[in-house]
Image 1 (cartoon, helix red, strand yellow):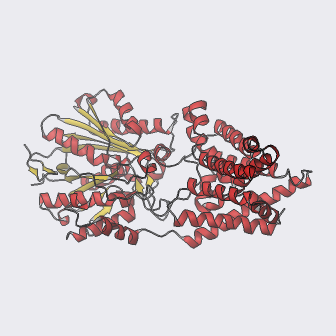
Image 2 (cartoon, helix red, strand yellow):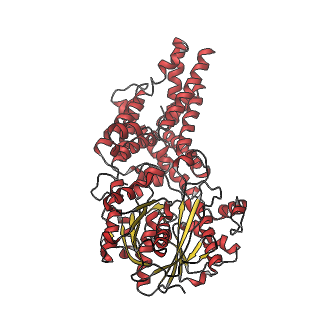
Image 3 (tube, one colour):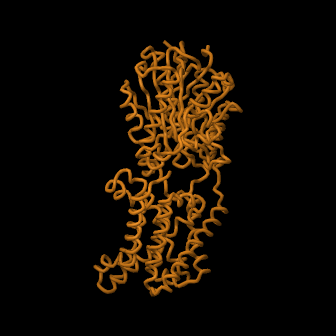
Length: 339
Length: 151
Length: 117
């Protein structure tokens, strides 16, 4: 059994492998600085489907198929399917699962779903209940805008702290055997609510959750930020990153140049009008499973801490004047075995 | 609230102060100037269209009707063409405050929900954004009318 | 019925006020535009909005506040003729054109076009 480190962290004795990963992206993401790192870039947002929701389902299915193909896996070898997305009742994931017919755990962690699914997949494998787990997540700008904010053709001005939901999907196979990187540790976050309520500036609501998980990770595993070549948060954006840094500094932890944010990395701020950066489940997925994955395979990064962040409100709670609670989960990826 | 997260060495109030410092300020001058100019231009266009209708024989009491219909049509069309939101991200209130904003909100909502069909989509959702404008206008007018009828 | 200059300036000022409210308050566009309509209605009930329209033409009749004015005028003029029941029968007399057009065109555009995202 893996030793639990504190209440939130697990340090795996036999770290599972992130044996295969695939990413599919929308046109805007493809045009961003990380475009070359994605396996497939779509030409438009509808993918010849009848709705944006159907397009999102297709992206998720494509990502899963590619992840299996890249690792030379057959679908039957997967013991579990873990997936989540932003849509009401996580329909993209459930409808995709309907086609896969694997034992399925549907997950909702908003934009923290990537780390959430990787963490749970690693736990299933490390505990011996699965040899291979397929984990996936997706988000689509149009399907989430119409659900959370406004119709896509509505003429309104986005403020500077707003973020742009990433269109895309990522899938990974977590296996008891395979190739590095390995998932050496996970830290499960708790829901943190610091009474923020601006739905157009979610980085501000999520920064305390990210800081909480990071602090718990460092304290419970007795690690310093410098242990990692790269620490990335999911989608705090420019504003949230600065806040995260400041909260950590108050507890004596310095996040230096090895800290970045997937939302800030995925778009080119000068060329693409995305205000504070990207957001959405696919934000962590595209950057983590596409860009960071490649840099680890190429030997440039040996230890990475991926901290996906999610805002757990709904349009209803917002309209009722409630605040936005958030959560962050951390997954440590290492080319070695973490010992 | 902060005490249930002892690892976070910060109170809610302190965080709020931090947020206020970090929050980017909107480019107020730029936004206001552009809103003024673009809103003025739209009303200028409306005035021009109104004068055309006057010259076509509409009386000055009636001319408001074809004028507003024309502006609504233009706004709806631009919304359908996918152009209105691209303009509005710069013009802000300049396009939202005139009746063009009203037409855009109804057309955008109808467009967005057309996948849910004519009845459950277009029909039901059309007033999602514009509904409150109509509701509060009617409520205000009802009160005003009632008061004037009683006095 | 206004001139090009007064239409431009007054229309621009309405939008300027709207922009300040958008940027400096936490209200949504729905809140702010509803506020404009209520304000237009109140000014209309005092007879002031019509004078603004005389001065600025489209600069006052195009902003959404004129919708409130038109609803109030419809209600009040019928009320003057027929008493309280007039409030109900006259309400949409002057705004019928705008609402009908908005509904019909929104429907037409939605049938023939698709959202582009």
